Length: 305
Image (cartoon, rainbow, N blue to C red; front, side):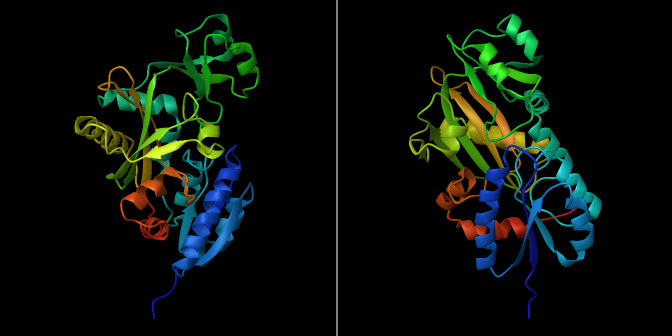
């Protein structure tokens, strides 16, 4: 008789994305139980290391359902490497580079991938003079789910926006007027492409998690040449960061010149609710949510550094 594996789902965490993580974890738990796994839910906090040391021999795989800082920035991955236990998604280096938008953009640019022009600045520098012609983007250097992302338009008060941000150092980027695309990959192999049409001027936190007006399309009418370029860039970005497991690469395509295809960022820890982007793409590719989660567990490894 084949032993049913025990999977510990790491959820919650210490970042602003705690609630999103818990939603992913709930969906993952249901999928794992349907596949016959024993499931332990672990709400990650400052006591996690002590808990993991005591319980690691009772766990076969740690399923990382954390998002944001401490979840996808290499820190929790470093803890799991130290413990020598198999875990899901990318390793320490890929996670830390993918989460750092400034560093990852430099790596992409070095690989010949087009990225929006940008610079890291202190809050008080931006208050003195606009770094780009409006509209432009300001966002945290290391955060996910579009937390803290703002478009600075013609009449936007930067003082008011900055006052509401906790970060003292932020990333400022040119705003690309265009379409949003995203690509899901499994160990570097493209799973599929999705076009995103938000009601707002960009795919922000509200469009992702609160709006029912965001439209998701499988880009049947997108030109073959454009799709080829998007797929090429997604593979290059994934390889450059040395990602493993499930990843997602986000793009912006210029309205006026569709040859202007920009990589916005790579996500080494994509959301895993049934309505998240990667599961949507997987379903279109013939992979059910339960089978996707099962694949992620079976892909778990150690020594990913």
